[in-house]
Length: 127
Image 1 (tube, rainbow, N blue to C red):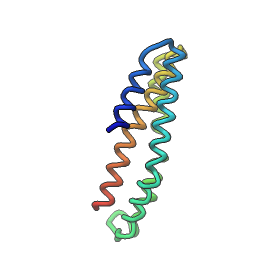
Image 2: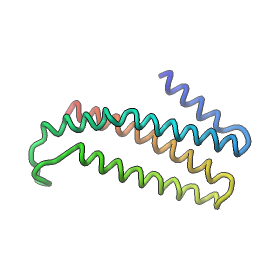
Image 3: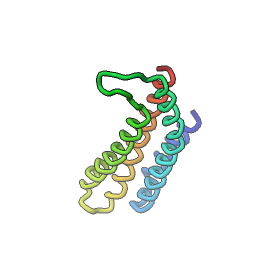
Image 4: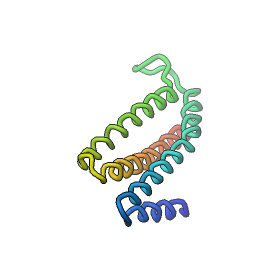
């Protein structure tokens, strides 16, 4: 809970100041979100690998691999996030808001992905 309050206050702090200050703040927020995602990633992969041990064949394939699917999905998600945020930043047309919009988008999408990955890990554990 304290981490959520700290995160909310940090994001709120990114709303005031000159464009350069706001941009720097959002860049830090994006880097922090990325670090948080990287911190939970090993646990998510471990839960997928543990689930793999219980998987049998399915109509879709002989030997499913949650870990392989998770890794492929994450690689695709990173590409999607980066392209989506570039698209959203295009609205600034190269102006001073471009970096702000991009970093804010990366932060928001990464925080959402962290929630998804945590839910995925729980689902694999509770299987």
